[in-house]
Length: 105
Image (cartoon, helix red, strand yellow):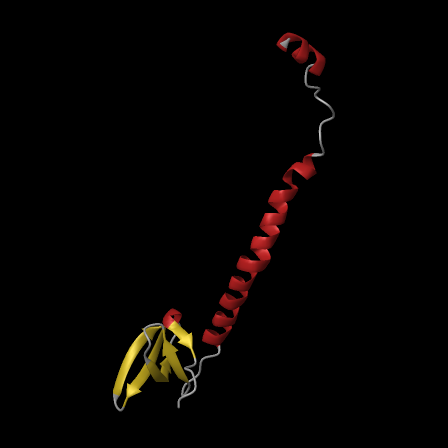
């Protein structure tokens, strides 16, 4: 009985080979989603941060990644000198400047 069922079903047919692009379509869609939701916004933020660092000037008030807020008193290629209190100056690497502090209350 089982043998007759197997014979009736026949061997699986190979059929036509599918379009190779259709096989990779889900991967392409997933990559596109990752690009537009994760990669592109991160690149945009990095570009804005670089432009901000390039446009720093003396007298601006900035915040570091450590949370210090100070006024820019000196600038070099890689280092920013901040005055955090009267006559207290610290040097911070440019990459650690986050941006302008939030509005004070």
